[in-house]
Image (cartoon, rainbow, N blue to C red; front, side):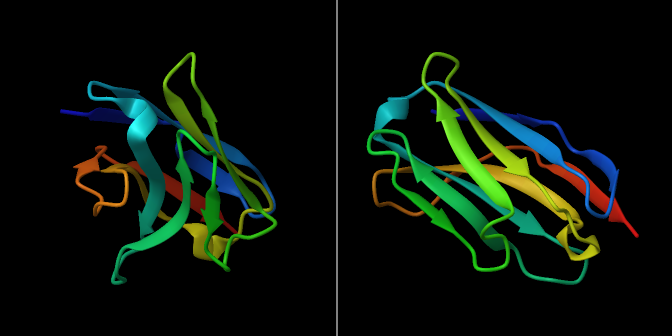
Length: 118
């Protein structure tokens, strides 16, 4: 059983930066694919970025390419989402999620609010 704990959300002005962290424990983390999702009010949850622990292979949604960076720290079993040049449309609850190899995401963190003001 994998447990995920997010941190790092908050309020920032447009153009600013935030870094989200997701600490993982339990399971064989090296065989997991980790993703960051977000859900804005009235909208469906969408994937923002993902990374595989073992290969480091990365995916970004078009809406965040060039602004967000996902990374992992093996020693700390932590995945990060560095968010730069934030826009008001990035406002959402951000969730960290884990999936075993190519399975669907099944482990979720509690979510952290990111609010970008104009």
